[in-house]
Length: 560
Image (tube, rainbow, N blue to C red; front, side, top):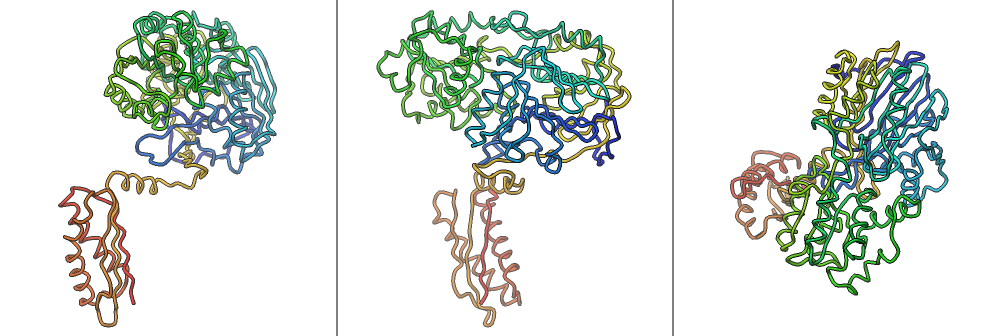
């Protein structure tokens, strides 16, 4: 299996297809890929990654859009495989740069995107709805769309025919043979494309380490019914705001057990409203109620469908766990069902929410103690099945951390794909397809772009480090004024801090700083920078010894 080099990729030769992941390879989220041939670009997906604990103040993380900055006019289209945030969440940030890019996707996917674009005040956009079986020519790219099964309706794979060969990009998929909506992955079309010849197979890697086949969605029904049957008080179900199938299961169980349904969380209300309007979600009459009407019903007459299954700090469920939600108050004996998988990196956040709910006396049911969620991704058995049907010439695992990509590549090799034809690259790795062979030719910068409120891309790694230090280690400022002519301290030093509790403790070190400053002046130190460093060293040693911490220390010495 080939790994990406750090060298700058060479100029692209005519009739060669260049594939560059701009996100989603090496992390779970911000999925995006660029395909280029003869000066034209096709983009597949444009998602976000949600921040972790070491990204303080960051709202979203975008794919490597900066790599496209000088090539936006060459983009022929953006293809969206499905409507999850990690595949569509960054679309508004791309269209801010060039609003005219045509967007291809299924009806539900584009409806979800359209709602996001309105929030960003992007109204004049080119949305082109496609269905499975459709075939569209876009510049140098001949696109064919295929139905795939996933944890959101209307997911599509896309086959891209070019002068350099055919690429099949699965998007996120699995092979549930008994899906809730009856829409299975189109293996007949997969086989047909395999007969035609797939030169590069870009395949979902998320569950490549999981043996066997992914459990059917309908298999969670018994566990969910047990939760409804045994819950005698308030019942909260937390899931992804886009998981229409899961919400439908909750809706059906609510009707069976005589509970009204209320959505909590803006994204849940918005997405389920879209799904209902388009016919993807069946809401029986007199089932759905408004949040403001909850108090008119007994606790055992309502089920609350909430966002926050990943422990997001500002989500409805996290606010319930912290007793901060304005309407929903949990009490001992209430039940909370986490009907979702755990995205890697969110373990600590979810753990905090579960602990908070348990501390309130709630009975928390989750994937770790009951079959209440199944994955939306193909496991190893399904991937092997695909490799044997398709017989791809080259394989490029996508969507997952490095260990997932490597595990997926190993599966391809087991089915007979030559090891040298399995390319393992992370974000920014550049792969060229020519004469039936895919090779890694270099690497570009596809690093994180951070979004903090309305600020996009102006947050550096060093600033994040500073924020983390401020949050974890505290902050100390030192202010003094000195007279260089008579080598005296005119005022200060005044020492203040945040994050240390009793600030009176700084009085202990003030005299030491004064003495150190005075000695430096007597030794002929006559520039403010060196005097500031003197202050920083004295305070740094003291706070390390007293508090075992390394705070951010900002000394200011004014010279007169």
